[in-house]
Amino acid sequence: MKFSCTQENLNRGLVFVSHVASRNVHLPILHNVLVEAKEDGVHLSSTNLEIAIRVLVRGKVEETGALTIPAQVFASYVSLVSAERVDVEQEGNSLVIRAENQNTKMNGEAAAEFPIIPDVDRQTSFTVVAAELEEALRQTLVAVSKDESRPELTGILFSVDEKTLALASTDSYRLVERKMHIAKRPEKKWSAIIPAAALSELSRILPGAEGEVAIYCTENQAMFVVADVELSTRLIEGAFPDYAQIIPQNQRTEAVVNRDALMKAIRAASLFSKSGIHDMSIHFSPEKQTITLTTVNNQLGENVSKVEAEITGDSNHAIYNHRYVFDALNTLTSESVDVLLIDNASPGVLRPHGEGREEYVYIIMPIKQ
Figure 1 (cartoon, rainbow, N blue to C red):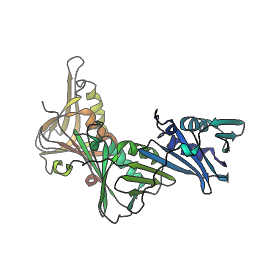
Figure 2 (figure 1 turned 90 degrees about the vertical axis):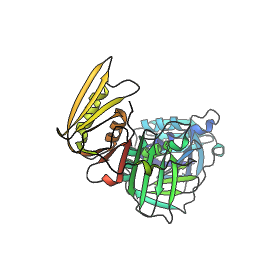
Figure 3 (figure 1 turned 135 degrees about the vertical axis):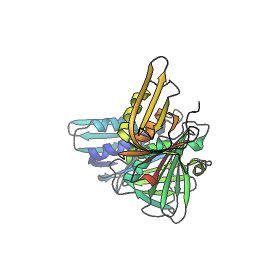
Figure 4 (figure 1 turned 90 degrees about the horizontal axis):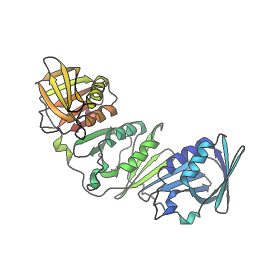
């Protein structure tokens, strides 16, 4: 194996694959990245047996070949190279890396020891805009459960029909649904629960990506193709909750409030909430056109913050976990948000105000006193 490429391209590929390289004590080979020099370029691959990432690095290949190299060491070293060009040559089970005044030899292991990454059938596919998928993941990953006893909640439900891809996540205390337009429609409807760990890796790849993301799906696997990067993952077995029935269809109180102003008030209120409970009382006053946030801590004191808002309907109040409210606001980009409330025992609803309102809904269960 012998090839040359730019430091920028090689570094970018290694950043993606090295993060998946597993610290598996039973299979040390998973710490490595598989480097394959082929006619069309240099292929970098890593896997933890649940998630796999493959990156094509453009370069000049003089001799084909393959070897596995410790991912973290390889990635760290290439990131420190200041030269524009990197020359790589295989010598037995080692890689010699030359870049201007630097000459490094890294020991590796035979490519035959690396596990085979299964191919994903590309029959069923659809495409979405990369920037929109990046935003949708940011908005839904916050509500994924970390409770391994309910594996179906540790991922995001992808549901596809003729026109729309809907992403949904819940940890039983809150629920997010984000709908997005499908650029290329699939031949049939499809739904699956995709692990949050895989989607977190995908969210590292998407920033700066242009164009569309192709999504291929089978009964037990999904693959996302972003330009020259492929991420494949196993799916989570189980049934995702039928969440449509818990989305409130009416409300007694509706408020339109500036997002930044509400976030600042929540930050202040959070300093005085009870540790472990994170409770924050919210009162809506149509008469005064204000939202009042109140937190009380017997040791630290109390805080009352008021935010101006356009409020219609009845005077109302509820108690929420301030972190859950802040998470929703922090993932939105609209200048104002809609806050909808029935009563202090029913789920509250957050939506962006104006454009995008129908594509996003965030439901929060109240804290019952």
